[in-house]
Image 1 (cartoon, one colour):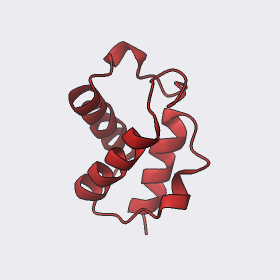
Image 2 (cartoon, rainbow, N blue to C red):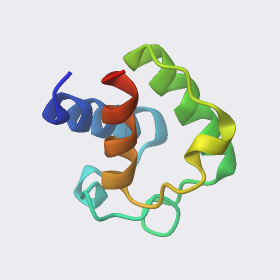
Image 3 (tube, rainbow, N blue to C red):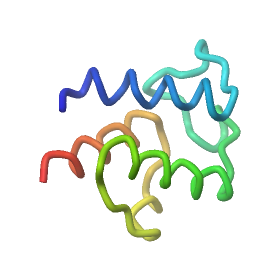
Image 4 (cartoon, rainbow, N blue to C red):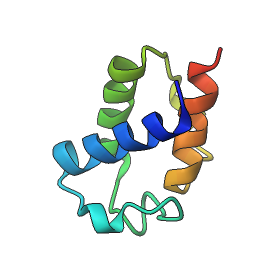
Length: 81
């Protein structure tokens, strides 16, 4: 799966499922501070990512992810295995 497809898919579900303005969805946007994603949202996001990308995410794997770029890189790593 290409990085572009990952980014497009992530942006799409963040706008549709979490009603985040797509103008805010830059790769440098901080998930918590800029996008308003809290720990409950992260749990929902994990489920969506697992379904859309066919990966398994352990709860502690999301700890170091701050920006949307970090998140897409994480998914890219998981899907390349």
